[in-house]
View: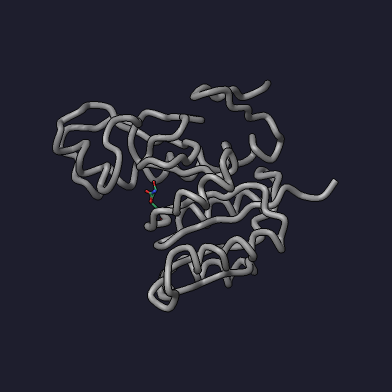
Length: 203
Ligand code: GRF
């Protein structure tokens, strides 16, 4: 059977990308990361991809007439490689409704809070400012909204007295890296099914 083919979209540091690569190398992912899509040529994640021998599609949005135009180019890259799952890992750009619609049920995202609490930017700062005692990580399907798609998996992370945003972020990132690889492996094993907003993971 051909390997389950994965695209990762990222714009930044790439700690989740690296964790996925490591999981692939150890055999735990059960899939093949065949392309990194990145909208920031200077992002550290681009170097991580080179070091891991993962193909990249790196682009600068301002060099295209429209979002539709660069997304068409992305879609060609994905189709050429037979990508089955798009994994957003700190991709700081909203996908157009037509792209999301086309890949419906095949795009997932990771967000550093227990959704629906604290969607959008700076979820960690939002949780600290609100004063919650428990926050966490959510992996969810991507739909047309901002962090609103069906929840696939969540893990709680305790907020401790005196936590700064940096300390809390480090704890959250650690949890993210483990959870994301595990969820992607469920997809590779074809254990995930979606019924309305309800996600089931087969044993
Ligand atoms: C992560 O915190 C993720 O939850 C959010 O973007 C961040 C990406 O970090 N969506 P990294 O680039 O994987 O280190």
